[in-house]
Image (cartoon, rainbow, N blue to C red):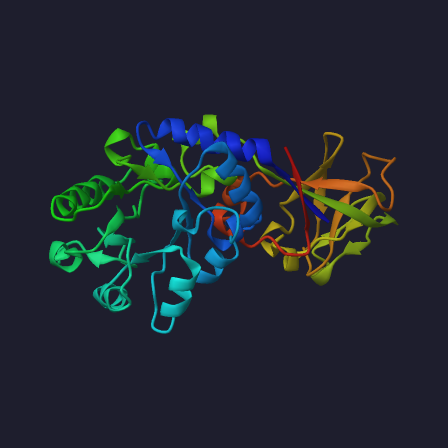
Length: 341
């Protein structure tokens, strides 16, 4: 199995989002191992293209990027939990402080430059915008003061409400830069761009909203080898539960791909593949390591040949109800990741 990754498309997507960000600079969310694609490869390419801000969730993710960029360009979104103080200082990455306790911890460490998250309506991490945020942040050396939109991918009044709340906070919190917009937030317009945007999904070929559909290119392609070719007879069944029964004689292939690789059972009966532009339907249930397809229309295909999975992220979301974020970040580690530029 291999995951063919298009480095030129990745860079093109970042540049398109950077342009759409107007006077703001686009960073890159590279948490969850670069949304499953390999964070080191992603950071190396985007840094070379001019990206200056990278966002991870955990300190271990920051350490995994050692040697690629100045650690001061890496932001750790989860901040500093008790017991992480030494690791934070050793890493050199910059914490995003999310609570009064984290701020106190940072001060006691003698920490320097930091970022601060303001909760303006997401209800997860961050200082509550209704609290004395200015007082909590007084004296901190804040590079990036940020918030996160909860409904940027929807036409929701919450977006404007969050923007106005963040504008209110900004009047009292002194920072070198301010940031609000994720991939979909960039498309909301210049009022949301501020100084730095933080695209994630769209960098990797996902389409968070229709407004960016025309500027984002696919980055990933899944290719799988045929393990076995079989000649099925009418009435033969395939897979667990015998959910597919051959209506007539047909030629099938068993592929080395299953839900252990992130190719989810939700695709059973609806997923598809292709070879030389010819569509090859998925047959029966996806199992842990194997998936069966109809290859009656491609008689030349045999054992060891490569087949391409239909892995258009918006289409997968529409067909299964599973978000594009999940499809990307849950791709298995058994895939060989092959970058082409």
